[in-house]
Length: 283
Image (tube, rainbow, N blue to C red):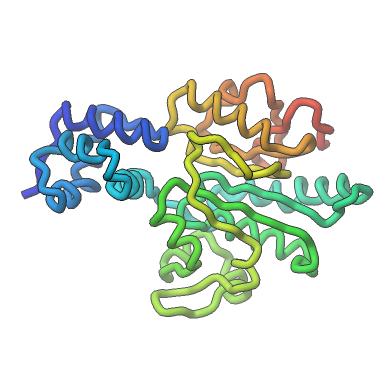
């Protein structure tokens, strides 16, 4: 029989998860804790979820902390989720960036960050979009940086292997034929697309040391799980990580007020994108 999570258990686990990765769990999430952490409670011979949280706080239990983060943060996603951001990327943003860079020292350099990439469908969707636009893409200096706090998610994303039902959801059939190949367990993204992406585990609560600057940042449906104070801090640091003429995509549920005075909104292809103040408005 699965161990039930008491109110004390929920508070202990919620506090731990918030400290580890910023995700805020409500008081009603006892069922989620039971479903995702029940096996860990048994494996570590804990009498409660609070005891499991206490064990995770031990200096010697980094592996347990990471496993808890893996289990509590892996969410459902799909290729070309909410298609409009990718349409805006294809029809407005990338053409504008290419034009803006034409007379610079690096006319073929593009830097894109998928922050909170989960199991990789978003960065692969970005890579396929770029490949459709730029026939000689591998002659360009293009880097898609994809990060997530979950080790398991990054491992799945790096292999690029997806079950058939994941590939069938949201992915145009012609893209499957062009950018995937049959593989044990389903379909694997081709090496040509995978080579455009660098996957790395990263915690958005921590400094973006060594990440560099980006032309476009995607961080969709991630910050909604943060406290308001952490959202504001995150968006400020995104502003510092964008090029002067950069773009930030956030989820439709993220409040514009959280984007602070550092950004202004633009609407393209039924999608709202945010620009750092001082950028050239795209009409």
